[in-house]
Image 1 (tube, one colour):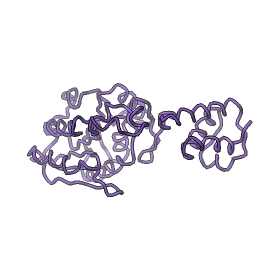
Image 2 (cartoon, helix red, strand yellow):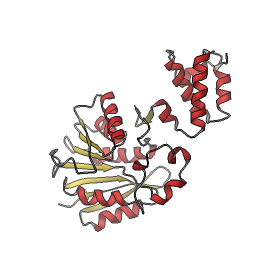
Image 3 (cartoon, rainbow, N blue to C red):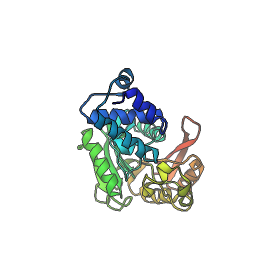
Image 4 (cartoon, rainbow, N blue to C red):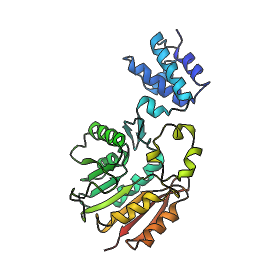
Length: 286
């Protein structure tokens, strides 16, 4: 039998050390043990049984072929929450936390805000807003069955069944009868925004494993921004807020789409910690 130290050494010849640690913690806990990364590093001489070691090495092979570790262990940290994720759903990124934090600030002072999270995916934005915006009522909307299933699991996991409604819809098509028309305070969206021609050049772990439906934003990457800007005006109250996550080079383009629609004013482009454009938001005209 091999020790934890030996198993990690074998793994790190194929994959990053952090991924190896996460996978080993995962298989150890599947075996009925109680490990986290700190305990793992203090128990380097521990000898897992052969079955556990074999499972670990199989997962190392999966990861070495490009499968994201989040899909293997069905977990991703986001806004200090441990979200469930699965294949068929975009893995939440730290970049999106910038957008969530901005919306939380914008929601301050709005009593019991009504929020639509359009293209919800795993529900990362919806769950984070329900947790951090007092009295919020959130509609989590997506066209993907995988996303609806994953989002529903996260809603139930954090016991937000009474504050989040999960709806399968092609953008706004199936939420016309939800009482949201003219009554929505905030619409937030992290839509597909990768140019169609660029997807084949993405890293293998994204290109071959994450859902293209959640990535492909059409020829110029702006297809869904145009559709959401056009249709959102019917749902938002006067002075309601529309906020988007955008690609690093799309800030001004999305701002222009909102500006040229004549539906929005006081438009803003926010940067992430690396200095890239990450969030565009503005207010609906009265």
